Image 1 (cartoon, rainbow, N blue to C red):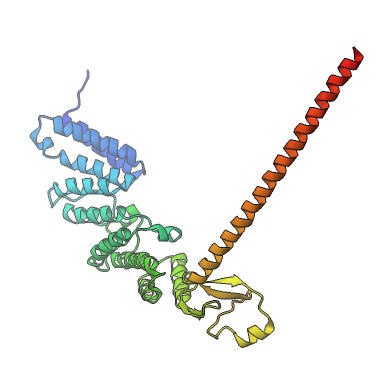
Image 2: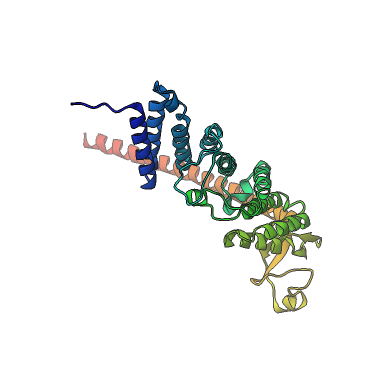
Length: 326
């Protein structure tokens, strides 16, 4: 005798399979089972089951968001979470009880975080000011949450208080803004970098060392050895060039003197003088390069002319030999 499962039995089986796959870490399988449960409920003639259809759809979208981790997937999950009965206790495999209103808010926060560009100190110079604005906007949202942690911290791998994350975002934004004004406003850049350092207490050592280095270099001033103007901002508005520095010069112009000499015996030259020397050097190099190329081409023409002359003589000699043999 064949027994057919009712829609409710199919629904419950698929929900159980979904939670089982979730517990095993198979989120893709969980999404498939929850979507099938949604299909069973939404097509059923059982009005009670139809009213439960949004729950498996939410679970499917929720675990899909955990897989994709995109702003769109988190927002979609938040949208359907908002449609659930606020009193519904959600089964997310967590120790704490979770209800739709709190989870909706959290998913919206995750959507904002997922929409931020990744911060890489090696690429900070190419970041636009619009990126700094995005970091600041999200930072303000996180700071408003205070010291609480995410309900989903174990599921998304963010194990810090939200205000700490917010301060870090502010620090990243300050770094981007400081980088943009290093050349024109080195003193102001130092101020902004100092603000960033205060916000980056929990940042990686790489980021903190970058900020400290920029503060150190931009805070330095010297007089140019060529034009004697005072310049601020090492490696930005002045650079070091090789020079013949003897003991007399070193003793008279040591590290604390207005004319800096580096540990390697190089002298400080402002950006203007450096680019002037470099461009002039390039022009001189190009002049002699072009002159050398011209001489090489003249030599090539003479050699080719000589080769043609020799080939003509050889041809004449071969012709003469053939006639003599006849």
